[in-house]
Each structure stands twice: as C-alpha cells, then as structure tokens.
Length: 525
Image 1 (cartoon, helix red, strand yellow):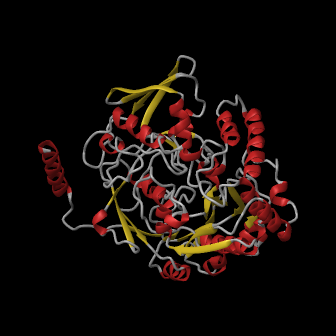
Image 2 (image 1 turned 90 degrees about the vertical axis):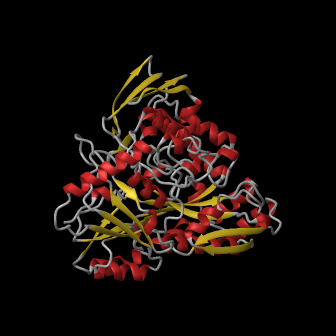
C-alpha cells in the first residue's frame, strides 16, 4: 500500500507540474444509451450497455475488426506449436491498470478462467485445455488436449459477455457474483462518484492508456485513440425526450432511436444517421425449467402461432426495407444462414390449430409470467406483441413491466413463478451475436449451464459442440443446417425476425463505430 501511495503522489505532482496555467475546458461526449447501467460486471450479464461500459474501462487480448477478424490488442503476438495444441502469448510492454499496477500474464489467465465459466465459447475452450500458465509477467500459455480452431475468436469475444482483462484479485472471484470495483486498463476510467441511478453514468479518459502503435482502427481492433476527456451517459427512457435533446444539442449521440422517429431526425440538418451493417434480430426466450414451457410441445405450439411480420412491424414500422421475416437461427447474410426447417416459421398460421396443439401438449392454465421492459422501445414493442400472442392462444398471462435493469436482475432467478421466477421475456441481439454457434448465447442447450432459460436439449447441444470440430466452411454449413432444424423442433426460443436500426449523432462529432459503440472511435468534428 505504501508503494502505491508513493506512486500516486508522484503521479499527482508530475501532473501538477505539467498542467498549463489556464485549464482547458473538458471535451465532453454526451451519449443517450438504450438503458441505464445497472450491472458493472461484464461476466455476470449479457446486457449490451454493460458490454459498452466494459470495452471502455477494460481492454481485450484481441480485438475484432470490421471484417470479423481477430487482431492483436493487448497481445504483442503469439506462437503456436505442437500441431496447434500449445499457444504462447506475449503482452505489449507498458500496459497498466488504472491503479498503476502492471498488467501481468497471471491477470490474463485468471480473466480467461472467470469469463469462460459463464460463456459458451469459453466453456468449450476450457474443456479442451490441459493447462493455462503465466511463466513470466508478460507471457501466458494455453496448452490444449486437442486443437481448438477458434482460439483467437474466443480471445477476441465481443458478443456479451466480452472477454476483458481485469486484475487477478478481481478475476479470481466467483464469476456468479458481481465485482464491486471497476479497475481496468482500458482507454477510459469509470467515475462511480458521479453515478446517479436512472439519470447518469460518467467515464473519464485514462491518461496512462497506451494505444497500439500499429494497425488500423476498426470496430474493437487497432489503436484506441480517445477524442474526448469525458463520456457522460444521459439516461432518457422516453424517445421523444431523447430526440429533442439530440436536436437541441443537449446530447451528442443517441444509440438507437426508434424507426418511427427517423424521419424527424433526418429533417434536422444538425443530425446524421448511420444504419448498422448486420442488423438486429429478436428472440423470445422461454424458461425451460418450469411449467408450462418445460414441455417442448408447448413451446412448439407458440412457435407455430407466431408471426415474425407482427413482431417486426411493431418494432420497425411498415417500411419493408427496415425488416425481414422468414428468419431462422443465424444472422441473415452471414455464411451459416440457411433455410433448413424454416416451415416452422413460414408456414401459414392457424390460431385454432395452435390452441388445440397447446391443449394436447398438456397446457393446463398455468400462470405465465411474461417480463417486459418499459424503457427500451424495441423491447416494449416485442413484449406487447408477445403478450397479445399468448393471450390469443388462451394462456393465463401475468404481464410484468419494469425497467430493463430490474428485468435483467429478475431473469437470473431460477425459481418457479410463485416464488418470484419468470416464464418468458423478449430480447434482441446485434447481428454480430448470431454469426456462429461459438458466439450465440441463446443457442446453448446444456441445461443448468446454459444461458437464461436453461434449455436442456442434448441433441442441439451435441450439434453445437460438433461445429467446433468442423474442418472447413462447407462442413460448418452442414452442421448449421442440422442445428437450425433441431432448434426449430425443440423451440427453446422464438426467432422473431430481423430489423435494421440506425444510430443518430450530431455533426459536431465524427462518425462513431456504432456496431460496437466504440467511444474511443468518436472525436470532435
């Protein structure tokens, strides 16, 4: 503790000597996120706002670029030996955590272990790992029992939960329990003293951060050069309020304005819009632990009654170029997207038949607790359509609306509904999170170790794991077709369609990297 105090004192004295006589005004980026930051630990939740926060304050071993390729980030380079079974990684020189301590190999090993305990891709990696070690401060090694093809994709994992590196003392904690302090090595530092729940969260530029000296800035890869001294999140659940703030200059960047407000924003000469490349797709998530959705036949009856057009029209509006129906399991336009088993989604709907199938499946009027948020317009729309669908099917629906943070906390409960549990909720995913089985949290079907909903579908899980052994893209595509057939048969979730949204920002800032919400990627125009 004495050494750290001395270091901090020396740093403060140096900063005081270097400070100009007249302080320059801070450059502040004011951002309106989709929801409040209720969870600060990126390992314990898949909420996107937590991922955005995580990429600001922690750094990654590898960063995913705009071509979906992992590039070295904290890592200087790596070597592979023993027919792909022994990997050695060397860290860049001079990496420091926010408390002044150097980033060490053992911090990386502990961080990988903590992340892998909660992540499907990480779990597969650890199942094939014989040993992880840190022979010295700037090196860590992974020795495998058998080759693991997507090694770098795993270390660059950005789809929530993202793999970030934190100090060993935090990474060694229970991955089911949220850490209480944010100490990273990333380009920003979290400012907990300025946090106002439901109103504001603040980050400041990390003056000790060392961007990569080479490479091209692209999505989460390359040099992360910060253009603002502060980033302030302004929490505005009401879209009209957020739109007014952006147009008046009270906000600089709005993450995801609803599509029905885009015409208004287009008319403002001070505002620009940027549409995401991979779109967004929706899922209705069943709780497979408890009645009635513990029965696959009940889930199939709901799937058979669902209309993706109804869900997508509610979210994205009537303009057909803004949404797609007939969507299966994988992100449309990416290599694994296919039409296997799609009759379950595209066949003509017959509500009376679905009601009959529901009764034959054993539904006996059990209460269905449907969770929905009040502060995210897209999820509000999905929740309303889902609520209407279940009611028309004759289900006993208890519709529970709360803020997104409360929903995120409740969905972690595995209790039955009479003890505070839940039956179903709707969520959305960036297209990046549906490109292959390694990054698709909702595709895991391993029961208690699966994502929220905890489906236990052995055949689906067997197929998912077999994808990691596919030797080439052709083999991966064949596995993907089998995965989609099984997923639409077992129906652990509803694929509710794909839509395209835009991010909105003022002309006073440069075009942001919207796919990953890279706050280091924006700067004053």
